[in-house]
Length: 277
Image 1 (cartoon, rainbow, N blue to C red):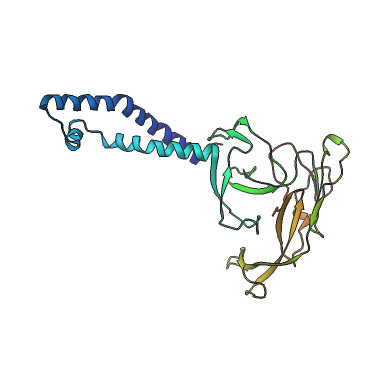
Image 2: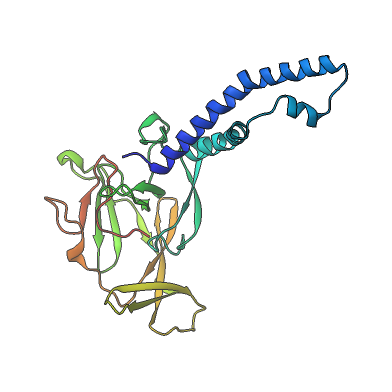
C-alpha cells in the first residue's frame, strides 16, 4: 500500500520540477531575448520594473517554479535522511513521553523508495535495543514504535510475575538454544509518574499520565513504579503499575511454544502482544 502523503509529495515535486525546468531552459531564455530586443530598440538601459513588463512571467509558473526547491529538499530529507515522528502512546514511557517529537533515521537499515517503502540498498540490520518505527503489520495505515530486543532465532521468555525477560539466541530450526543473554534489573522504586483511570458515560475506559513529585497524589491516580533494565550496553527505564496483574491470557500465543514464550522470526512482524517500554 502506498504512503499517501509521500505519494502526494512526490507528485507535487515532479510537477513543480517540470515547471522549474520549463522556466529555466525554455521560458526564461525567451524572456531574456525579448528584454534584450526591447533595450536595443530603445537604445537605453531599462529598469527592472519595465523589463518585467516586457517579459512577464505567468503567476502559475512563478509560483510552481519557486516552490520546487523547497519541495525537493523536503522530499529528499524526509524520504532518505530524517523524518519527524510524534510519540502516539505511553508504551515507551518514561524514556519517551506521549506527544514527544523525535527524528527517525531513515537510512539506518536501508535506502527505500518513498512511496512503497521497498528497500533499494541495504545499509544495516536492526540491533538489540534499537528504537524502531514501523508500520503496524495488520493495518499499515498506522505507524507505531517499539524497542527491539529479540533478533531472528532468539527465544524470548517473559515472566509475568517477576516482569522480567529472558533471551536465548540461536533457537531457530530446532537447534539447541545458546546461553541466556545477561539481562539485569535494578530495584523497583517509586516513579515520578501517576496514571489515572476513568470511564466515559458510554462505559469506554481511558487513562492519562501525570508527572508529580513523589509524595503528591491525584484523585483516581495510581503512583507508578519503575526500574532499569540492562541488556549488554543498552539500559532503559520501565514503568510498571504496582497493583496490576498481567493478563497472560491476552498474550499472543505462538504455535508449538508455551504461553509467554516466542521465537523471533526472520521477518519484520511485531505482534506478540507484549508492551515494550
